Image (tube, rainbow, N blue to C red; front, side, top):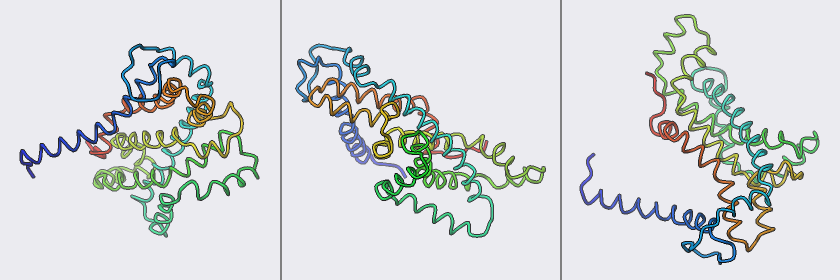
Length: 274
């Protein structure tokens, strides 16, 4: 379907408005982060002077080195576990026939509709009873389980679109299921797998409720949780707060730009069976 010139103009105008709506607040935070603290009143203003020392001050006073390491450990652990389990389960639901697969899949999808607020208190008492509170495991395991519903759903849909003729040819050549999965299906599926990894990494990095309830030691606080405590200590220091917010968000921004092509390819194109 070809768009008329008027429809193209309307599309560009609407998209430009949405883009400005998203970008202007980010520009305001960036301006605030480089504005000297003595001249920052919290409003949107172009700085007359630039003070990059706000980032160093926020980094040192907020102990973000420790918080970023904790977030990195948790995020890497969740992404690795989620990816392995989702690839295996997605392949099983997409390409293997077993009793109760349909019912089990829809039960698993219920996890997409269950907010963390609904189970965080029982989760806390369950983890405390086995001595896992205030540990990295108390964050990695529940967040892996929380991400699996989407991840399995995503990988199942991707694997179902994989050409069945290639799978049958591999099985005729004597390949077993695991070899078909890891050597035939996974290599051309890297784009959607990386898309899933970026989304799970973003959700895990930004998670706030679970660390707030399950973590008590300062050295195990994640970056968003550390940012909340930092905000409480510097409530009116807008320059430091903006710098700290950028520090916490920067790793995910970098991750997205590094994997941008694969992310977009996975979202739009799915599997390439070339």
